[in-house]
Image (cartoon, rainbow, N blue to C red; front, top):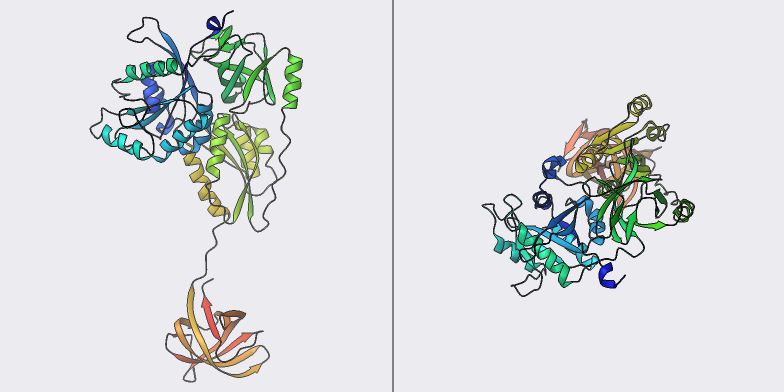
Length: 493
């Protein structure tokens, strides 16, 4: 077979950018579906792959394009990086009414790290508040140099609502494909990138992959790190069962021994025996047990989510939660519904929590958790889950409150000592001092001891408190020495 005949031209395109800049809506228009309306909270929280065909104006033959829709929320930056690493071309989406935002720059950095060509799509050009000129300026300020403005990066304005500019965008994708000579070889050894994995009680463990080289065929065996799968069935991007899938195309594969890691490479091997052996070799050694801080409360967490990528996103968000007096110990994590076995692994531990993102809870798991006082919290939006956990941590281990200074007095003279009781005379310099208050004794700005005011007098009369400027006599109980010139401070507990 000649090199030319072995080439397959089907670019893989990652759509990346800031949250709510119209990435999913743009793909929604392209593939004529309604995915955006079904997204919880309007946020794409998983990676999906889609395949379309586009006919250029000067060419009657439709050409295939694979799209990867990557999440825009900050928590999913790792998934975004993996999305672009599986792609040939990126579409950097920038809203014409909003300009470049922090996650736009994150996505741009992911593109440059991957070293792939990209196109800027200015979305929402139909909005009254759209100003494509300002949006371009915001890109230029960040070093994104566009064609016609001193740079070479192609761009187009699009409206995911009306479809304006979408055909031009697809033309640009195919133009970049041809200029960059993007192609793959279906005759090479088969290799794919896992962009998502999940677990379902009916169908088992599955993965969405992008085939980068070669052809995956039903009947072969595949391995990805420490997991393997016999290819008994392959589904294409439309959910149709197919006998083979060539490079450049997305595929859905079920039957893995466990969830393959997002970003791992899937390869074909000769036999089941070889697949099992390679998977065993790919097993990572167990991580060393985390050393816990004995001064902090340990909060044991078990994480469950709809997909492996979502687990990564949840872990990323957990790192943002303040842990001043508490620390997290993630004892287990995985994709799929929360089961009784999940809850059982936390039985007997204090401050144990099961966090579920976009998953259900088995009835038996719920019953066991209630009996064992283990908290289960599930939410369909990731930041709602971490907001709940933040509030829960404040209840379990409240942040330390610095005591405030209530009063300061100077000891003018030390009169006598009887056991641990010292009779002194002094003057209030700041705030208020009170009978029965605990005091800190300061000498030359160094704390030398603590004590308690057991008697307080002013003009030979017993009193309960004195304010700034007043002189007093007092009996202070302390095991430390007291001397003229010392300062006593009263603070809130």
